[in-house]
Amino acid sequence: MKDAFGLPQSLLVLGGTSEIALATVRRLVARRTRTVWLAGRPSPALDGAAEQLRGLGAEVRTVAFDALDPEAHEEALGKVFAEGDIDLVLLAFGILGDQAHDEREPLNAVRVAQTNYTGAVSAGLVAARALQAQGHGSLVVLSSVAGERARRANFIYGSSKAGLDAFAQGLGDALHGTGVHVMVVRPGFVRSRMTEGMEEAPLTTTPGAVAAAIELGLRRRSETVWVPGTLRVVMSALRHLPRTVFRRLPV
Image (cartoon, rainbow, N blue to C red; front, top):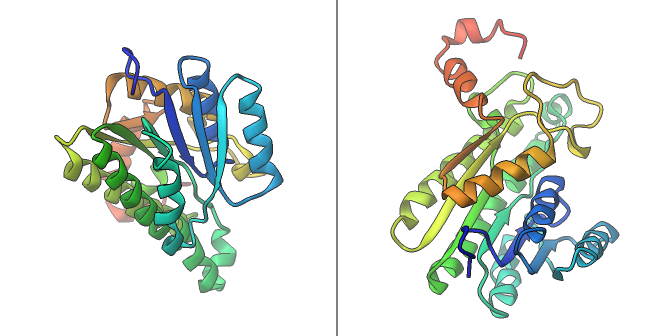
């Protein structure tokens, strides 16, 4: 169960090598979290992340999970929930893709969509059902400001995040009153391995800053979290710009 401050004692990360997810877990382990499940493709990186968290005092277990194999999601997540209640599920997997390359190779674009959206729909519904069955818990979904309005530079990735964001909002509405809390997190450009070598955008953030915002959002039981918070105003303005104007912006 969550502590008096609304922070989880047990959590499951879908996308166990995500920098944002691991920064969040480290922050929560420093508070109260003691049981951590890292779900992801078996790899040295996943094992290394688990060992690092064990060094911080957490009980950490790993489970094989592949966003592109939705038929296995029920079994994978079922193993975790069979071991005991989970206070927080952090849905943190996703790929950026290569816009220029993926436009020329549609199957690559499909992989981006299947990972970021289809895989998340499957895993999100399985996790939500398990949380609802236990009667409590939070599902935190890492979305992106890229989903707020399609940009020429990354509309494949952005469209997949737009679908994910709409799905998570709808799921939150469906679960309202059940004891399960859904929180959508919309970071801006995050300085991480995934964006290494890319030109940074205004209001760039870091995995640590996103982690801090997630913790605060959990304490407040927020439904939507923007990182940094000023992006809420910026994206509201950009969302309402006429397309003829928006096309001319250097975004």
